[in-house]
Length: 101
Image 1: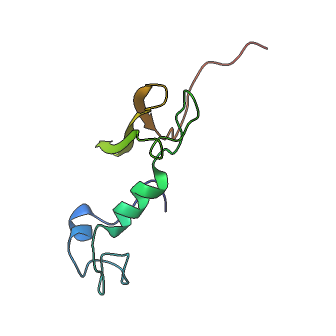
Image 2: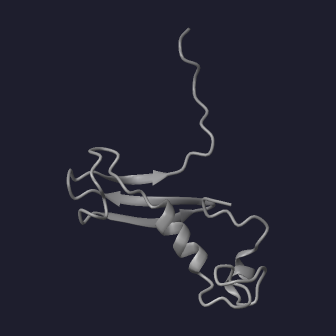
């Protein structure tokens, strides 16, 4: 699964050691950090490049911080190179007008 989607696993279960699953990344038996999956998802999904100028965000001293709105993961991004700031989120479904034929 991707985009922070844990399917049927309830948040309360993910927070408790010994929850569903097993192994070091599951939050289950043998887990060292029950939030390791969330940390890995954050670092994997974090925007790497500025949508305005294309420069690296984190490598150039910019900011990309994650927050949530309901089930949506949103990254607030600031680019040191060009000064652009804004929110970036995954679009799951786009509904728009038909283009002229």
